Image (cartoon, rainbow, N blue to C red; front, top):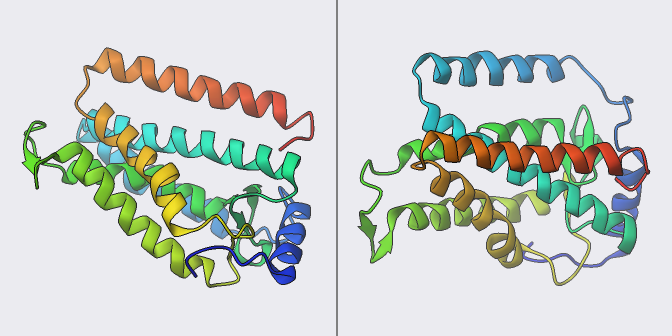
Length: 214
């Protein structure tokens, strides 16, 4: 599926998902296990290795991911449907209309792909700076995989104009640009960027959730 089909079935599935946001009906112990694996299996080893650039990249992508998920939920509130929606049957917990617990934890570590970039930040690949080239390549991979996800009951695209190409350009490229471009920045710049980004996310969540918007 390259784009949403606007079908009544997709709309019904999206409406059912909206009713399940932050419901504990499907909660199970994989919630805790996955969290432990991310913290103990990924972040703690990276901290011990002092891979602070990789951690900054991961947190940058994750912070941008959360900002996008908040905006997606706002769109759902005001237009009726989100750009992307996760189904309640596919997850132990829906955090916001477009992101499940499992999906969010995946994005919490996706930024570590920045560690695969060449050590030379100025090296070019096909005439493109490697930081940008890797962002485009990673975004393409994620967008192609999302085509498969949208063909399953787990992930829902409603709008006919939203699909693989829009998500590639407007969502995944910014995700990986944030990770790849912050990777080489001075530590103070990384800290300031992450503080502003996560501060904005926290403020939006603190305001919009009590208001019932997201």
